[in-house]
Image 1 (cartoon, rainbow, N blue to C red):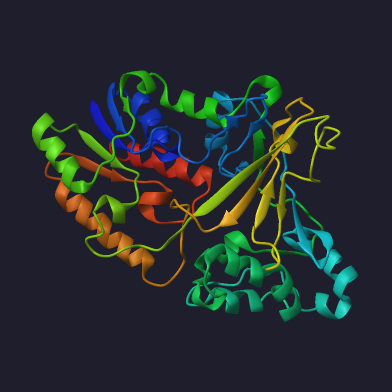
Image 2 (spheres, helix red, strand yellow):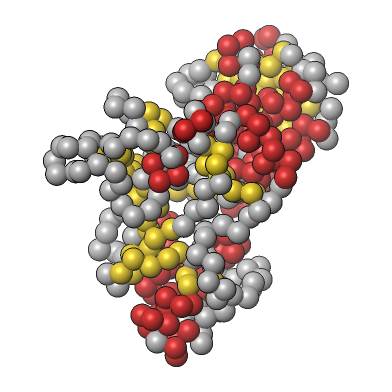
Length: 379
């Protein structure tokens, strides 16, 4: 049994670890968070006029994992919101993922014949080569290439295709939903649901008893803390390992984002009220736009207000939002993981989990599943 634990990082991974630890009987949990706010990037915010929005862009919960869905929906009310994404191509509002019927109308049937919804094995391929296997050059050039280069800041042929099946799809079945998972939804504002409520209930009383904000840690300072104050049964690391280890083996490649929030108040500046854009998320792939996506949370939250907020997402900027999918990154992160374990396992059992610490693109349900399973393997 694990009676005491120390968690580095208060995002979703740390919250899920905390939840499972507490339900297994662990009561001494301490959380060290480097920033001055807990919760990571998958969270809600509320404007001065009471409008709910997501400060870090759209997060729609979707999963085929029944246990995970029942867990999150027991902690905050969700409604079945099925996410559809608009993408601006050749001056028209089309759908993302790429739809064969829309391509036929805009490009002609000849181009449609080059589309494929087959799952191509990405192993050993670069991103551009993988995309070229499922779509003609015109479609790749308009829908994918400029968006990808803006998002990552490097040419697509320099990216590994390993992440491509999660990011790029072709649909020939007419299904215009972004996700096909059995369970999907968004916190229901009409029932007071929110991502902040989900996080609060995952953390439980640890928020009051064990959370310490503005406590940046490195591997070296953590070892000093364990030497000075004694070690718990378990140390959990959810922070990016390169910075945690003070870049001793070099820097991992990360891509940051910048968000600007535009408030539209009913009756002001010509805004009549309601919605500002046609859907929760609009993609802007063309290089003529400096941003990549715009988000209007009210489409998904079901909040009853005439005011709204549109969040504009720009590529680049501070923060470690995405691991850059280039060769060597996963191997370097594993080297860091081995280094962390070698330094900490003399004091306590060690769990490294979460999107940042494992240097992988993980959806919310993946983060929670791996956190739960990681704890269960130890208790």
